[in-house]
Length: 316
Ligand code: TXA
Ligand code: MG
Image (cartoon, rainbow, N blue to C red; front, side):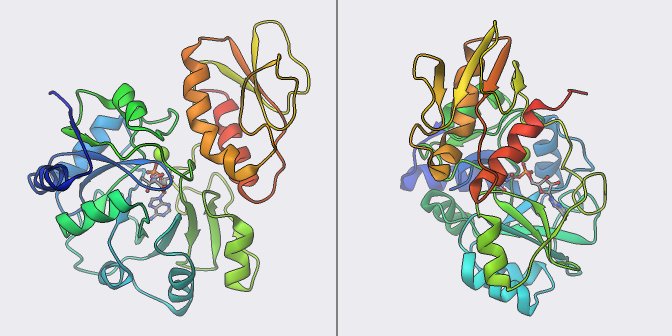
């Protein structure tokens, strides 16, 4: 199959929406990363998402909708959900809530869990596509399963070209890390740190979040330890450089040493936006090992360190 490259203009949206309506797959930008979208009500479309990514079927998908009103059709809404949505939607927050009965969603979306992950993205291209399609779009990150998430249309093309109908090119993603996932089916729990800093979430919640314990398959089935894996191996908290290594710097490291720098000024927002881009770019240079400077573990640094630990984890 030839993957069409669509521009974010009227004809691009019409075409993308028609592809979704026919059960095809369209990669599109969100403010976090590019998503691989399919009609969440269509079993065949959802099955093809898993196939295109090589993703295990037990790992459920996030459903993208245009508004809080639409979200309420699919999940059991709550006072807490309402407060979080008012504070952070549209934006880089996904909420996991009890799924309602008779939603019309494909059971493959949730991998038959009693909960649904749902989000209202902020990116204008995602919003325009959702408006044109006028239905729920299931979308994991648009990368082959286990690999680095895409923050540009070129990344998507490199990973999935020939396996999906189209890519809507909306340029580079602003946030650069996947959404923060908040579990609200029981005690508010951080299921995945991401593009919305945990501190902001806890402040709006007025409470500390429980942290998901990895290995609990029911709460976050997709949080495998090894993920975001580049071809090179990764060494964290590097303050010196060994033979055969390239340095991915953060802050004012020796410029001669750092092949790339996430943020020479030490800015975590800039580092988040650059993380996957730089990993893709350095990986293409083919080093044996990418050594990464220490990153402070607060704000977006928490999500950056989470992704780096998974990238560094032993591969299955
Ligand atoms: O920023 C993002 O979240 C991007 C954009 C495209 O929206 N999407 C994304 O999707 O990162 P994905 O599939 O790569 O990661 C979604 C994560 C997976 O780890 C999955 O296991 C988890 O969300 N998830 C989905 N449904 C869940 C549920 N009902 N309960 C717990 N975790 C769930
Ligand atoms: Mg992903």
